[in-house]
Image (cartoon, rainbow, N blue to C red):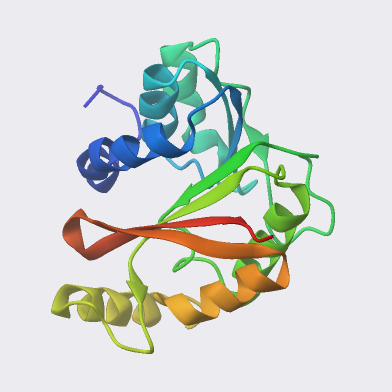
Length: 200
């Protein structure tokens, strides 16, 4: 941990396992849109390990300053300046990208924001691209672990719009914008990495 920089222990714990999978998916030069850059730990770790990529960090206007100190300190040539992005906005300030990545956002966003995220990514994602979504997910309304059940209760106690999303609901959102769930990787701490790709 670097002193005085915003820090997430969860990001520190999961960045290695996520990178192993992203190496396989983001396997050619291209531009990555990250939705919800947070502390910037993922952006720095992934961009440093995959110099063939241009990493585009984004975050909500109220949170975009959080990642800036770490990104500025890293000073990586393949990390673009952070863009303020409200996923619910009618017009996104990013026109197109090869791939998209977002970690631990779907359960914090409102369901309407999750819908906007999928629709806008679906409209802008390159033909051969992929959208990688990391976090805890339910399946058919069932929790994958007691810890996820407790986490979901904690989220809903904080705000009624939060909560762990159901895999089938996300698959349905993706299908509406021409994406299909191509891979579903089990990850540490009862999380998953969902990979959505263009359907024929």
